[in-house]
Length: 424
Ligand code: PSV
Ligand code: MN
Image 1 (cartoon, protein in one colour):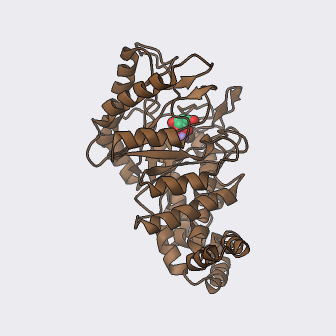
Image 2 (image 1 turned 30 degrees about the vertical axis):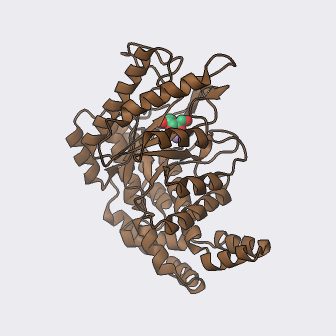
Image 3 (image 1 turned 90 degrees about the vertical axis):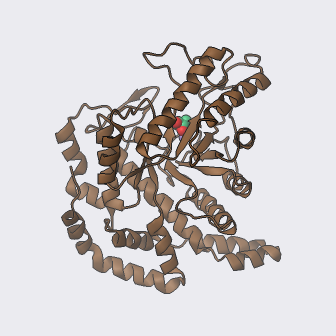
């Protein structure tokens, strides 16, 4: 299945008049539209290979049909999405859910869709069929040096696989921790984990980054060995300049002030990137922006302010990745919504009148501070996001075109209705 320039052209033509009207109004209201457009056009979000199949819960999984059966088809799916929105030009792989048999061929296939490889993810939270030792009681933290060694070697192998694909970062997420008080000596677990991470870090290519992702709970419910941003920061500070903290929005305890965490990690030069998603209760992995769009905006507000203060490139200096998937939506539609939600929050953050906000902060004018932030948040920037897509050759309404062309129907016809993508 391919989205052709003809599909895009016909779709856009039918919507152009309405789009131009909307855009004209918007650009008359704001004064930095061109600069925002340019930034939006440069901004790409990586798609997780494990979100292209219908997600499940531990109670069941309801595949919708036409799911990618192998890595090639996953790349094809991200290619479809990217053809529609021109903003998801990267894919993040999870090994061994994805095993590139021929790195060069996979790299070429991705390039043919305009895709590059973002962070590769290791997996020591599941046992694989051919694995000698079990991760039931942890991996990099394990009491048994041999288990730690096995997990270290897996991570080193993932880095090698990533290098062959042109990836430049590895994300390490550990499910290590304990389920019951007394099960674990916390200091010992930390030291073991640090020693293991050091062995992995030592093999990083010079231009690579290592992201350490934290999570408050699940699958361990009493303690997690990388349980919050403080613990992640301890590891990355001890590891060295190539190590950074990765923030997955769903990995916090309820009501955590994620935007403040982001601001401080950035200030310390230790923010590596994101796994975007949304949640109501825990690590729900819901579509980005579907539950708390204001929080997402506030995070981008800190990002724009903090990155500008440090002279960082919005487009390339952090890892922008999605980590969302669930069981009721078409995965590609879900991802299209997530990418757009991220772009909207980013565009709104670019609208914030920084000078006025700074002055209001200096005056302790709390009311004005709120007005400034909320006037940016309440601006309907969808016309700008659509214009950025249009200029890049994408569809004015990616979801609309996805349905008009019948992408899923075609994928089911090509692949069958009972296919199952690898992942959780
Ligand atoms: C863990 O919940 C996580 O957020 C990590 O990023 C894993 O790699 C991914 O989800 C697995 O689905
Ligand atoms: Mn994650």
